[in-house]
Length: 273
Ligand code: ADP
Ligand code: MG
Figure (cartoon, rainbow, N blue to C red):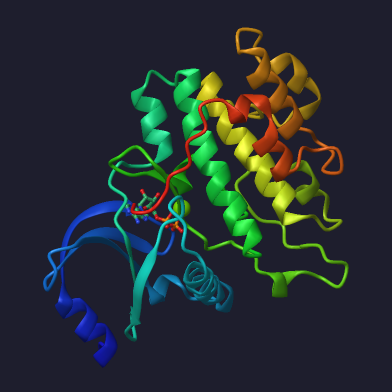
């Protein structure tokens, strides 16, 4: 049975091709019949959202996206639910995942292009942090690229809000994706979600510049040898400071933005977008 809200929403949109597969269902392209506007609808099957925890994850994603409005963060337009499904109508981001973009470019990106995308990633992530949101699952599959080549951060299913902090002001849930997770998150002592997001941004930058993951064997000790000599000195320095295993020593967001390599050719995306 479909609730009135969901029936109304479904009637208003014409569903098209599948854009991607998620853990709880599909993401489909949709055309709004009234305006002709194109959107992406994330359709989550409640049967696959069996546990309480997963249901909470979806509510959290919706609550978080409602707080955010930035050119480098995917926009949520509306939400509806039926007994069997939850629908999230999102801004359509039609340039694919950052992962595909790198794969299409012979495995890595020219430094200038990697910098441009990284600048936008940092702008989006730092905006989220200013709003009290830590993403906690930043990776190439969750960073989308629009038709203009601009970054849109997506998939806030594991995000954390200020109310999720412990009494110590830290986060305690170990989550994320193995290749992108900051070392302190794995240590079960509590962590600062902004600094662990910065680590994940560093892994993303590394893949864009170098063409493969830095820590496939999780051997952080050999990182220094793993940052290739052929990268520019600025890129090498920034990577080293982001992929610093000790979060207390890791470069902060404001310092990334002030870093000379970041600053070069910096052009933020401004509305209208
Ligand atoms: P999950 O939380 O299950 O990983 P995602 O939100 O990451 O689900 O969506 C799964 C995939 O669907 C993404 O990796 C992407 O390919 C596609 N997708 C998600 N949101 C959009 C969007 N707004 N526009 C275009 N494609 C999208
Ligand atoms: Mg995802």
